[in-house]
Length: 151
Image (cartoon, rainbow, N blue to C red; front, side, top):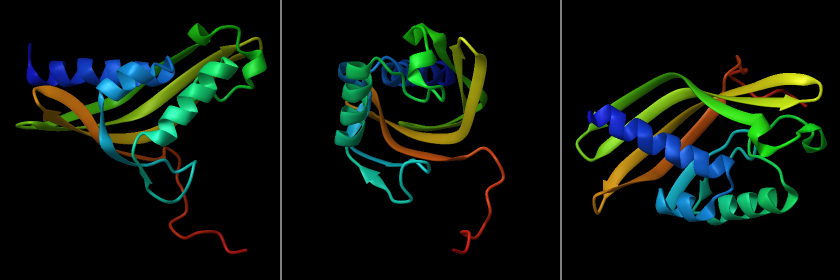
């Protein structure tokens, strides 16, 4: 198995845990000292696992899926949502890897399929022979203004 294949398979498992609201697998694949930027949530860094623990618990309780852009009443089943990694590039440096890609989230509903996209970089480190995501940075996939809009 090539190094890139190992990292790719790990990344797919990690991301699927988020879409499945699978907190156990998410914790197994994520460092406790995770740092992340999610541009649509807040312009500030988020630290640790509690943010996503809450998000996945609430999504599971409501029967919703992470990243689904549709009104959840329109989604027939969680299987109506899928993700793809466009332009995936993996850089491997010993026990550290950086995966960058455009995350495409497709949501099927009674009104058709809609696709949401944003760019992501995930930094992975092998800790005690297990890969863990230690940092995530997300940005819009559309041309955002360099300066914030004036009020």
